[in-house]
Image (cartoon, rainbow, N blue to C red; front, top):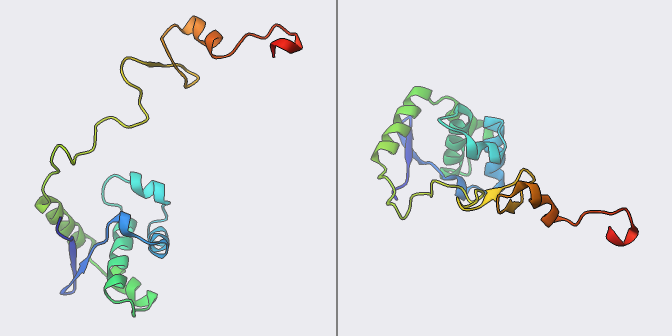
Length: 146
C-alpha cells in the first residue's frame, strides 16, 4: 500500500499508521487529542486532535532536529479543511481490501449461532432453568457440600 502523504506549505509528510507509533508518539497523540489509545482506536471520523497529532508526528519524523514548539506551530497552523480534503483524496485513492484482507463482520467476542450465552456470561445449551445447577453444585448447608 502506498504511503499517505500530507502537504504542508509545499512539503509532503508521510503520515504514520497507528501500528507504527512508539510510546513518545502515543504521548504526542494523547496531548493533541486528549484521548487514550483505546479511545483513539474507536474514534469514528476525523477527530481534529487525532489529525493534528498524526501530522505533528509525521513532521517530527521527517526532521527529528525540530523542537516540539516548531513542530506544534507547523501542525497547528495547517488549514483543517485542506487537511480533510487531502485525507479524503487519500481514502478515495486507496483500493478497497480484497475479501481475504477485509475484517470479518463478527467480532471474536460473539458466540456461534448454535450456542446461547447465559446472563452470567457462560455458554450453555439454552435450558436456562437447569443451567445454573449444572454450572455449580447446590449447597445443602453442610460443610461437605460447599
